[in-house]
Image 1 (tube, rainbow, N blue to C red):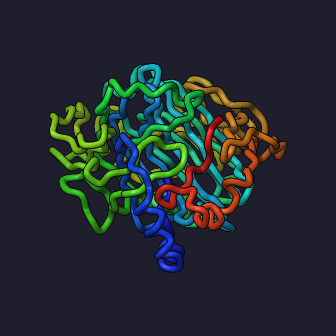
Image 2: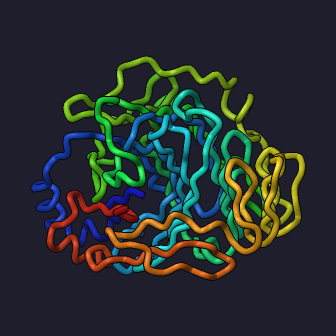
Length: 381
């Protein structure tokens, strides 16, 4: 989603980076991002969040292989992106992989109510064989096959608040709703171990652990905000990521109460606090007492499932039975349109062709096209 400079490139091209950064024009809006310098290979991540409302605004949690934006690097990323439009009732799951040509597998899911009206527990489960997305203990999607097999590198954990300029994707931006905030009560990381998940660490955000989290201070093409460290706040045991106008950064209001009884307990916690295991490819959702040994079967506890290799977990969105997930919406990279549909039954993804303006990060940097040496994984339009 959002990319910072890899250390190697920053050292190799330090003088050019400084020149690009010092001449960049500040954007009139400021967002926020936190990231872990440490990468994690496989695991389960649970995040208790209350998202933002407003057209054109995105609240996210995602994993990202640092350096994916570099020329010649293979992109690896797994997304949860909540749309602020339409009363913040929908969110997108996605995997992005590939070098040159990006392969995406986007699906949009609709919640029962606004995701900005209360806290919900979002979970990503990533094993060598599958990636699954859950909300409030209900698995809504599970994908297996070729694209999952290409996720081979450790990925850092990231959360951010930003605004895309792709109106057809996120809606027209309405700055009258600013400021907006994303509230994070807690996050848990479970390491993957021999087919199961074991709690490794938990952060309740009593403070911001500088050894675990960094604050972004960059931007990227297609983003109408600069990330400003002042829009990252910890208050009342809650991480607050803000989207504001320039000169109005920070958060001084009251943190909305989370009615859940605590991390990993209470309604909608998704089985946190206990080891989660899967008895086979496509087994039931987290916290479920019933599992399925059918390859790619939907998450347990749902009213409807889709069987067959690689079928998504049952939930608010029905995925195609048989091979792979339903094709994603397939936004292009660098303003291009979809130029190839992957027919591999193990994937069911949409490939977006890379344009000449985005295929070489080094070339873009050399001509100063990137405001702060950042690159979006795709630009809609």
